[in-house]
Length: 426
Ligand code: URP
Ligand code: ZN
Ligand code: ZN
Image (cartoon, rainbow, N blue to C red; front, side, top):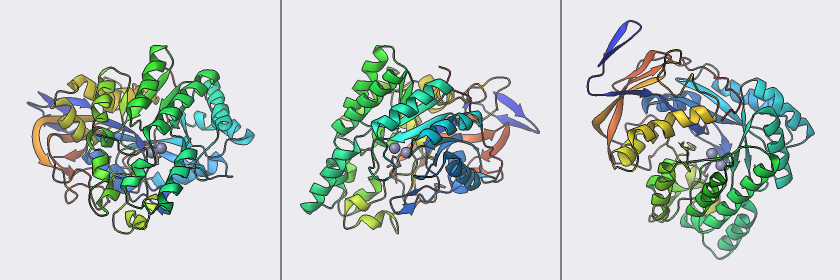
C-alpha cells in the first residue's frame, strides 16, 4: 500500500497504518522526591515521537495552598513551544476546598477534563476521603473524570518507618513495605466513593491482582470504573528490585513492581477489557545524581521509571507477537481507549477522515535492540537494556506531517500543540 500526505508518498508495503499512540500518564519536569523528573517537555515529547506516541497527557500539579490556576499556568509555561507532539494536561489536586472545587469548572472549560488525587504520599500529595468525595461529586456535575492513585499511604508510611528502624535500607524494601493489599483497599475505597458520588473513576497505574479484582467486580456491577496498567507491571517484577547492590533503584516506582506471577493476571485483565489502557507513568530519574539520593535509604529513592519511548515496542513485541493480545487490542489499549476515556476522540485514536492524522506506519517485523545509548529519553538507563524487540514505526505523523522517518527526527520543536479535551462522555 502507498499513501499520500502533503508533498509526500509513503511506501507502506508490508506495514500497518495505525493511529498514533496516546500516553495518558506522563510526568515531565515534575518536582518529586527532592529532585525533578529529568525529561522536560522538549526531550519527553521527542522521545515519545520516536517511540510512536503522538500525544501525551501530562499531570499539572497544584501546590498545597495555591489555586489550581497557578499550577496549570506553570505547566503551560513548561510546555509552550516545546512539544514535538501534541500534549494535554490532567490536573493533580492536592488541596480540595471551596475555592478549588469552584475552579474545577473553569479548568474543564479550558479542556482540562480530568483531575488526579492521591491516597498515597501523606504530607506531600495525599488528600483525605472527604476531599476525594467532594472532588468526585463536583466531577460528576461538570463532566470530569477523577483519576485515582489508589494506594493507602498511611499504613505504608508506618511500614516504611518500621523497616528503616530495623536497618532495612535496600531497594527491595520499597516493594515489601507497599503490599498489594494497600492497593486493593485503595482501589475498593476509590470505587465506593465514586459510586456514592455518582461519578466515573479511573484507577491509574494498577499493578496487582487484588486491585484488579476490585475493578472487575465493579465493572461486573455496571459501574463506570476504568483502569490502566503500565508496561513495567507487565514485563518487570520485584525480582528486578532485588537485583544486587543498588541496581534495584532503577526499578523503584509506585505502586511497586509485584511478583512475576501477577503479570499474567494483568494480561488477562487487558484481554477481558477489565483493564482498558496501558500508559507509562513515565517519570524518569537518573541513577547518577537522582536515584542515588537513596543509597542509604530506599525511602529516599525518587519514585518513577522511564517508559514513554518504549511502550509501543514492548506491547507489540511482548503483547501481540507473544500471542497475549490481538493487533486490534494493541491499537485499542495504546490509542483508541485513552482517546475515548480522556476526551480526545475522534480527533485522535482513530484513522478517519476529519481526524488529526496522527498516524504510524508500523513495520511489524523490524528488529531492534533497546538501549539507553540509542533511545532518546534523557535518563541514564532503560529498564529494558539489551532486549531485542520486533516492531517499529518507520514513519510517525503528527497532524499529517512526518515528524520521524526511519528513526530520524524530521519535525521541529513546537510542532506539538496543546490539546483541549472534551468532557467525559462514555
Ligand atoms: O513512581 C511513580 N509512579 N512516580 C510518579 C508519581 C505517581 O504516583 O504517579
Ligand atoms: Zn500515582
Ligand atoms: Zn504517575
